[in-house]
Image 1: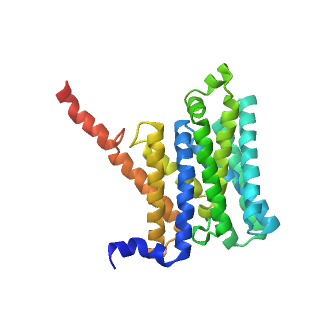
Image 2: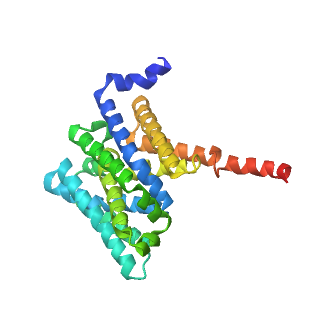
Image 3: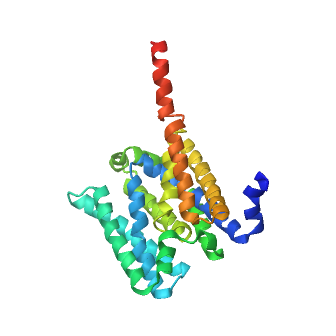
Length: 292
C-alpha cells in the first residue's frame, strides 16, 4: 500500500475514523491554547487536577442516566467548577497554597469518582469514563466538543489582553480595578469546559495530555504567546491524526496512542527545539568562544 493510502484510506473508508478525527480537531483547537495559558501561569498540574475533578460529577451522571452525554457533561461541569471555586476559597482564606489545595481536592475527587462508577457499573463502563471512546463519537458528542471549542476561541479573543496581563501579574488588575477575579474565573471555566468536552473522547485520565503536552512542546519553538498557541494547535492536530492512524493500523487503544505521539513531540522539542532546547543550548555554548 502506498504512503497516501496508509495515511488517507482509514479516514476515507470508515465513518468512525472521520468522526474521531473531527472530534480531535475540535478538541485541539480549543484545548491547546488553554494549555499554553496554563503553562504561562505555571498552572500545568492544575489542569491535571481539574481533569480528575470532573470524574465524580460524570460518575453521578452515569449512575442516574447511564452513558448519557447530557447527564455526564452536566455532572462533570458542576463538580469541576465546584472544585475550582473551593480550591480558590481554601487558598485565599487559609495557609494552603492554590496548587496544594487543587491537589487535595483532585485526589478526593478521583477516589469518589472511581468508587461511584465501580459500585454500579462494569469494568467496561469504568474504562469508558477513564479512557474515553474517541472511536465511537456520535453527533451529540461532536456538537458538544465543537461548541466548546468555538466558545473557547471566541472567549479568548474577547478577553485576550486582560487575560495575558492577569497571567503575567495577577495582582495588577486587582490594583487598577480591571476585574482580575472575573478574568480568572472565566479562564478556569474555560479550562473545565474543555476538560469536560474532551473526556468524552479521551477520558478523564487522558484528556489533559492533549491540552498540556503540545503546549509544553510549543515553548521550545516560539517566543510569543500567539506563536506558542499556533504551534501547540499544530502539534495537537498532528498528534491526533498520527495517533488515530497508529491505533488503526496496529490495533492499539486510540487515546493512549494520541497522547504518546504528543509525548514524542514533547521529547523531540526538548532535544531539537529552537528556544531553550538541548540543541539550542549546545549551539549557543559552541558559538560563545567565537563571539568572545
